[in-house]
Image (cartoon, rainbow, N blue to C red; front, side, top):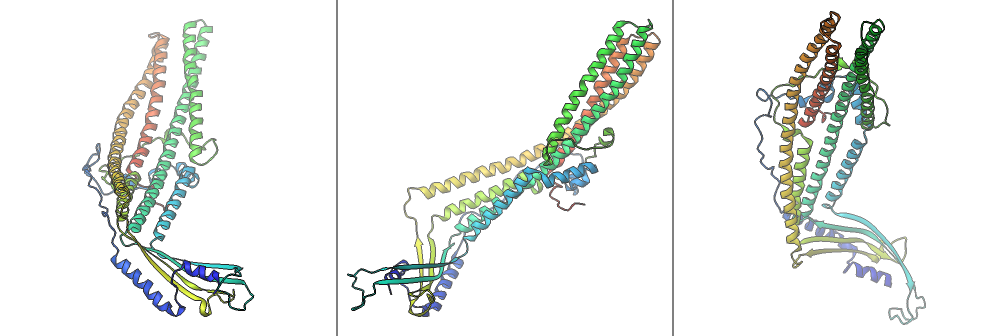
Length: 492
C-alpha cells in the first residue's frame, strides 16, 4: 500500500479487515442501545405556574357561560358583507401577516435542525492521492524503478453524539417551544389585523355619517341664508341676521374638508392593511344604517390562558427557558461521541472497496469537563435568570389580558350610556330648532335663538355619530382582547 494509503490509515486509526463488519455493526448497535437506555434528560421538567384568575371579568353581568363572544368566527361577528370581503382580502395580502408566516416556517425549520442532532449522521467520503516517492525511500522494492503511486479511498462515514444526559433533547424542546411561540405571534398578528380592519371600517363609516350630517346641515344652512337674504332685500330682516346665518354656514362648511381629509387618511391606512397602494375603499349603503352596535353576551368565561396569543406565546417562551436550564446543566456531564468509517483504499479507481484494501474503523470518545473557570456554572445562572424573567412576563401578559378585557367591557358599557343620552339630546335639540323657528316667525324670539339651536344640534349630531363609531370599535377591540374567533380557519 502506498503512502496515500498510509495517510488514510493514520486518519482512521487501527483499521481491520472487512470480515469484521458484523462485529463493527454489533459494536455500534450496542453503544447506541446502551446510550439510549442510560440517557436521562437532566434539568427540571416544565410545570405551568399557578396564576390567580378572577372568577369573572370585571364589568360582566351574570355568571360565566360556556358560550363566548370569542367563540364566534369573525365572519359571524362582523355580519357586514363588505367588511367580510375586506377582511378576507387583508388575510390574503397583508404584508405583516406574510412576514409572520415566514417566521413560523423559519422557526419550524430551526426546530427540525436542532432535533436532527439526536440521530446519527451518515455520509460518503471519497479521495484520490497521487505522487512520487523519493529515491531514498526504503519502502521501494529492490529493483523497482516505478516511484509513482496512485491511491483511491472511498467509503461511508458515521458521526453521532449520543445524548446520554439529554442536552440535545432539551435543546430540541426549547427550539420546538420557540417555534410554537412564533406560531402564536403569527396568530396574534392575524387577530390584530382583523381587528384593525374592522376598526378602520367602523371609523370610515363613522366619518361617512359625520360627512352626511355635515352636508345635510349645510343644505339647511344654505336655505337659511337664502331665506334671510330674501327677507333683507324685502326690508323685513336686517344685515346682522344675514351675517350670522352666513357665519353659521361657513362653520358647517369648514367641517366638510376636514372630514374628507380624515376619510382619505383612513382609506390610505386601510389600503396598507389590505396590501394595496393608497386609494379609495368602495362602500355602499347609507352609513347610518350600518352603525348598529351588536349586543355583548352576558357571562363571558375567563379563559384567557387558553385562547390569547400573547399569553400562549409567553408560556412557550417560558417552556423554552425551562428547557435551556436543562441543556445548561447537561454540560456538566460527559459527552459521548461516536465516529466511524466503512470503506476501502485501492490503487485502482474501479475497485476501491475490493480486495485487501477494505477497512473499517470505529472511534468512541468521551469528554468530561474538569475546569473552565466557572463558565458552566455561570451559564446555568444565566439560563435561570432568563427563566425567572420569562415567569414574570408570563404573569404580566395574563394580567394585561384581564386588564384589556375589563377596559373594553367598561368602555362598551359607558359608551352605550353616553350614546343613549346623546340620542335623547339630539331629539330634544331637533324639536328645539323647530320651535325656535316657529317663535321667530311669530316675533317671539330673535334669530340668535335659531342660530344657537342649529349650532348645538349640529354639534350633538356629530358627537352621536362619533359615539356610535367608538362603540363599534370597542366591540372589535373586545373581540381582540378575548383572543378568540380568528383561530378558526374554515370560512364560508
